Each structure stands twice: as C-alpha cells, then as structure tokens.
Image 1 (tube, rainbow, N blue to C red):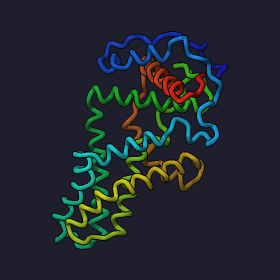
Image 2 (image 1 turned 120 degrees about the vertical axis):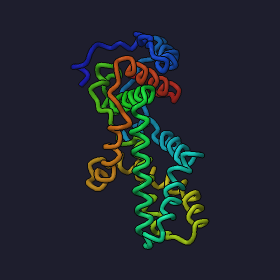
Image 3 (image 1 turned 90 degrees about the vertical axis):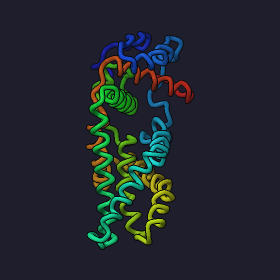
Length: 261
C-alpha cells in the first residue's frame, strides 16, 4: 500500500485551522509533528498481543464506562427508562416484557440523543475528528504510512470504538436485568446502579473478543450494530483533521515509548 501513497510529509506542520475547535488542537499538532521525532519501525506498539491491542482500547473503554455511569447521563439512560416503564406496570404485567421494553426505550433514547447532537455544528466537527482517529489507527494497524493521503484511504468505522462499547452495554443490560427480575422499585434502581460496572466490564471483554476474532460469524453479528451506529458518530474528516489525528497518535506513540512511522 505504501508505494501508492504520496511522499512522506512528516516534517510539515499542519495548516492552522480557522475553526475554534481546530485552534485548540493545533499546538499539540505542531509539537507532535516537529522534526525532532525519530522515524518509526512498522508495528512497534504492543505487537506481542496482536493487532487488537494496538492503541490501548482499554483506555477508551474505561472512559466510556465512566461516561455511562456518571451523573445525569446515568439518570437518563439507566434509571429513567426503568421508572418510565414502572408507570406502565398495570398495562404490561409481565416482568420480562417490561425489562425488554425498558432496554428498547434506553437504546432509542441513546440513538435519538446522538442523532440530535449530531445536528450541531461543533459536534459534527467532533464526529469528523472521531472519524480521523479511526482512520489513523486503522492505517497504523495495516502498516500504512501515517500520512494524510494514505490514512484517508481507510474507513471511519472501527470495531474497538467506544460507540460499540456503549451499545453492547445497553444490549447486555437487557439480558442481565431480565435474569434478576423485578422485586420492587428500590431493588430495581439499586440493581441498575450497582451492576453498571459489572455490565461495562463484561461488555469490554466482548469488545476485545470481537476485535480478536473479527471473522467469526458470532462476533461479526455482535459487532454489526455498533458499526452501523458509527455511521452517526463518525464523519469523513478533512485534510487538517487528519493532520491533527496523525500528530496526536504520533504523540501517543512517543509517550508510550514506541517508534513512529
């Protein structure tokens, strides 16, 4: 793939963007792309564990778990649907049915929330940076040059994305809450708050398995909804955003003691 890409531009600083969000990232970009960096050998980051470990997905997963369990987000997406379905308990008497409906409402709220914020200009730019991040990591995993022209050839979708993680959390929660059943409102709220870390941990392990066995039919089916959802949470980045993503990733490699390409 490397021989069809443009000549290396690793010493060229990214263009200064006019957008306020871009300006907040250009200082890191200039520092990370400075010519004092050593050239990299291919596949230097954690090759012992295979490509599914590249880029430390555990950090992304932990961050997503914190967001999922934090304050208003927790109240809306975890407790809110449960309390809402409690109001319908006289119309929907089966506990299992209520739990499944609760999960469906939770996923619908999540999708609606993403679609709504995706209409905001600043969030659309965040989603473009999200896509640039995925393209950069995919290029690194395929030993492609970390140059905008090369990185741009890759997809904005990635199996280890935190979007996949959150969706797996919500789907797995349906199974867990169904197994525990309903024993009153206090039990229901406590169960949903206490089990969030456990469900998040199980979801992370499923995400790792999906990345490790990407050709397994079971794993492909499990990861497919999250990949579809990334069509909302990622956008095609422009050249400047690819520059920033590459610079940030190279800085990550430097701080972790890995070589760069």
